[in-house]
Image (cartoon, rainbow, N blue to C red; front, side):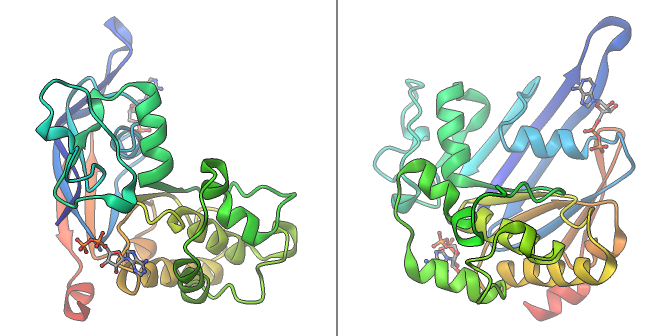
Length: 261
Ligand code: ADP
Ligand code: ADP
């Protein structure tokens, strides 16, 4: 099924002489359990797409539908009154959706915490906390208890056994990024956005992190959208979208990845 979908997504920045058309009407859907790379030159709209899909940036027009975030009883599309209810993702119906462009700030914040994961170029780990505390932070902030079997699965899949009591400074760059991946996945989000996740890593650590990202998709059924400049990084994905001047100009399925699934 679909995890997230953009319909006629337009984003302008500035006005008058400074008007920039960052997204010129983007239509795209991302399927669950897939790993998509977004490529394209600097300034082509990749980050803007990611930020509008994640509700970090408001769209000028168009819709962004996030699936599987409302319960079947209270899914937003059954409430034309406009009071959109973001239910606990534990009770999520994969077919219910919310149009995030219609949500208020508080609802968006809740939705981001519960249903969207982020992986950054700079890892963004908290230095005073152990790897395990960092991984659990999204749940700690919500006052929620971890699902121990999911946590164990994440730690094993990401090869972090024996590293959980280390602080970030005691870990290599690749290990720090794997902790950040586990943190992004700990809430079982609908979708995970990775912004140049290998931008700060050498080629050996990059390859390691990318293969762990790929395992998170194939073995754990997670859904990842990765922005990257790097064709080698993109080759790990199931699909590559290429942006130019605010539009998708190519949409390729990776033949190697297809054979494997
Ligand atoms: P990419 O991620 O592909 O490098 P961006 O999405 O960052 O591209 O940028 C797309 C266009 O929007 C560029 O022309 C950029 O200068 C412009 N842009 C991005 N963010 C802002 C902003 N906050 N204010 C004004 N213009 C912006
Ligand atoms: P769907 O039924 O459309 O695949 P689900 O929300 O049921 O959507 O799950 C999506 C994927 O996430 C599943 O295929 C599964 O691999 C993975 N997943 C979700 N929760 C867990 C979990 N607790 N343990 C292992 N995998 C999980």
